[in-house]
Image 1 (cartoon, helix red, strand yellow):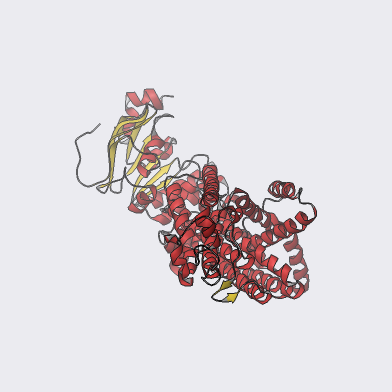
Image 2: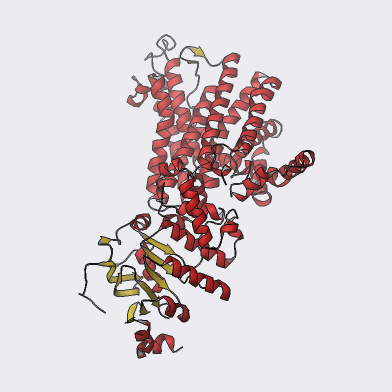
Length: 251
Length: 381
């Protein structure tokens, strides 16, 4: 761990982060830093606290102690929607989309305009919105299904739709929780291609188990174990770390 | 793609036209004034049911306390009318002339402070809208900011309905107690008890109803309507799309309250009194049943649901007074089990496809409108 070392240009600085559920510390005194345009992958065995870390950053879970600073702004005291507006986007593990709305409407709701009550009343579906939605729909391979109700999509398509919803939000920090889980091989390839395209010009925090995928995209890997950092560094470094091999990769 | 954001779709215009034909032409021509006045009374519940469509059907917030807002609107109106009916001239036999009769019976010797502004009609009209909106705002802010929802919210709204009833009954001298505020006579000197006044009030009520329908359709087709549906499905996702879920819930709850209050005020005007029996738990639940029977996703369905259930209520309770409540309960269970989308669902699933086929045969043009209204996620009327 690199406590105390803190250059000023980190996009995200997590320090001393702890969350305790009835005494069980799911995340224990965790510190890490994500730079601008960095792709960071978090790996670790089940129950290591990976998803909890993302929950803490996006405000879904409140931290017991510690701080999360995003561009110098403290996130632990903000509400979820304010964190989104600050520029943090999150994709959930199971596809979290609006089943009763069409693909177009799903994307439109994520379009970052008219987010207040009266803004939403006055919101107009103008050319800018339509173009952007169609552009994103094309990127996520759903252009020909744009008027389909989202609950009729396949699992993989739902995952893409959620990625698209994040994309249209245009966050500076994108957090993806197992983006290729439950996908077929061909869908995986397409998703990897999609992710390669959308992670440009922004920082990304990814949780993934697929080591091939991790190797492809990661700039830096953080290995979590029992809520703490077990190892951190390049993929090469992590892969050869005996502690990592013992608790995670060896199995 | 364009049509789903347009202010009113063609299907809405047809819905409005059919309803207008029924309420403005057919019913006034075929019913006598007594029955028409009854229909006017039923329609006041349609306001509440419509508010519930937005709040419950679209937003997923089940309120079992809409009677509170119906009552607040109704009582505001009744207070104004009562003050006008309690002129010194009319009340000279009382020990304190010039105050409402029930206050005199309860040994009050002057008009309570909160009654004073109800001498003004402008204030009353504003109060009919703002008092329930304020109440709903306070309840909504207290609940939704703390993320109380679902069943807990429903129970709390029910408790509020019970509390308000007890308060009204208990504070007899200020509210008229269990009898309510009765013996209302004139509005700015215009006698509301005559047949011609009842006819005019019926049309005023219908006009207000169409105003609310247009407002509700506007909200449904705005992005706000889609956010409500999104919120009902995946509240968390809406938060992580950058929206404050609590603010949207507060808004739609306040809106439903205002609709209910307009209905309440129209009720007082047409029926000529207001009492706690329209405020408590039982009427509040009945209002939810109107919405469920009409179809909780359909604004027009709410109107037909309110009309039909009340019509059945009147005719059944005339012939089987003991059985009526069982009938109502059975109806609710049947609707929930068999037709979860109510009358509007039956219409959409059976009647409309049949009509489409008929139209298609005649025109040989595909009826695209009905397809789009199904795929855009908001069930058709």
